Image (cartoon, rainbow, N blue to C red):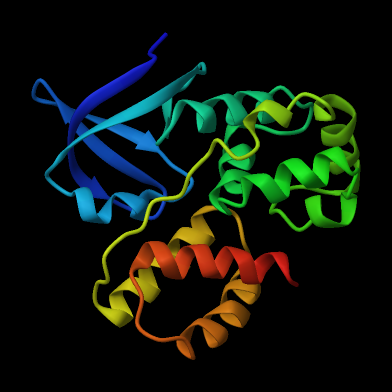
Length: 198
């Protein structure tokens, strides 16, 4: 099992980044790959979780060890797989997520893609009282500004990759277009916040 990888970010897509180490490019699925836009062709350390399936070996990446620990707690819940857990974590409001679990706020939890009422209730049942030590430990990084249209398009592609519908993305796109120019990472963060307000 891999704990982390140190290597060069050589490619960023809506669903993953490629980290090159010793001449091998590792595809690492991320909740918000664009947080690494400012680190293209720079060395990074990414914490990993490996999932081995019959048809694939998948790597999921995290900026901090605390993010990985939160991810592991989420996938321990019945009904939440790695892709759903990444989508939940992409919002980056981890304190809001922890608060919702601790206060049994099912209404907040069902706003995440792929989380229905039953799964939200299961999250509360399985995780309540087990996430407190992670609150406040997961930080958010800022990214410099890039070109407007490309950044917005990339953010919308990332929302789609996380499981949001075209209809939801179009609704959020209208609101994001009214905002000042931002980096892809910032558009994505704001888009995820807007999705939670639906």
